[in-house]
Amino acid sequence: MAGDKPEMSYTLRLSQDHDGRRLDRTLRSIWKHVSLGEIMKAIRVGDVRVNSKRVRDGGTHVSAGDELSVPWALNDGVRTVRRASWGKIRVIFQGENVLILNKPSGMLVQPDEPDGDSIISRVWGVMNTKTPAAVHRLDRNTTGVLAVALHGDALRALEALFKNREVRKFYLAVCVGIVQKDITIDAPLLKDSENNIVRVSEEGQKALTHCTCLAHDKEYSLVRLELLTGRTHQARVHMAHIRHPILGDRKYGNFRTNRNARTVSRPMLHAYELQFPEDLHPSLKEIAGKTFRAELPEDMKNFIDARGFVL
Image 1 (cartoon, rainbow, N blue to C red):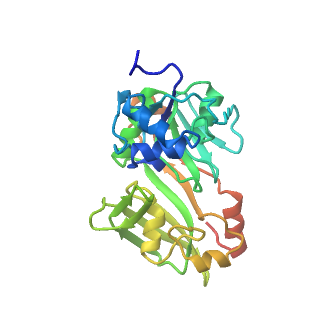
Image 2 (tube, helix red, strand yellow):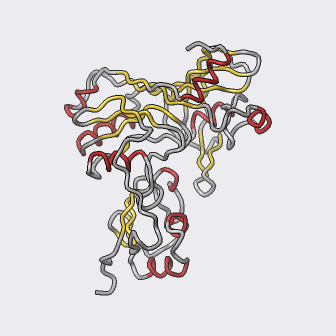
Image 3 (tube, one colour):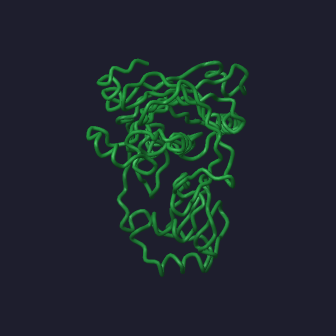
């Protein structure tokens, strides 16, 4: 029947990269093989759904976590990628309800196209279920510790923990210049979703980062960052704001310094540690009071060692 959900369809959960974007532009960025005319027609007749509801306005803004359903089959020019192994992903902890991973550089947490490779795609492949979900996000080129809920109860409990800032999050970063011993950066952040960029603005959301310098030479500092809030690109924007951008950060960093550091090809930022409180929901007892650390990636370890920095 006209207007019913088509038999050939695909459903995708949107990542942070799509947060705040228009629906029509999101569809164009994911299904590049589908013409604009076909996309607009599908929206107009109600064949596109967000969270199971038909959306007939292409200008509607979508959010990270939204479930997007479209009428285009997987074999309509889209390369099917099936991942049934961890590959470069290292498992730090695996329990009945929670999985803690060490995310490598160059990999998204959530797939940004049908059957695209990502951390969650690989978890689904290994576990043969699409129930697991990431609780927080790391940028594509940021490495480190990532928590994944394996079941619904654990997901809701973990989301509440992160929302209430009960999980302590520590990062390691190599920054340009000599950073003072201890700095608390209190600067609200405003996200421009259309351009996927964040800036300090009084109109933004409250954002707090505590920065501790662990070692430095005349050019760079090794710092530990505790993110007291969880805003998009927070560590990167805050360090650039105090004029100590993260080395290798092409979006917020120092172009000349990045160019001169020829061995650095990504932001030197690593999610190092997650600390969980003692009193947790029954579904999270296996991680109650525990601290999980992710081993440094080779590129960052080699850079730190070459400078003689000691953690």
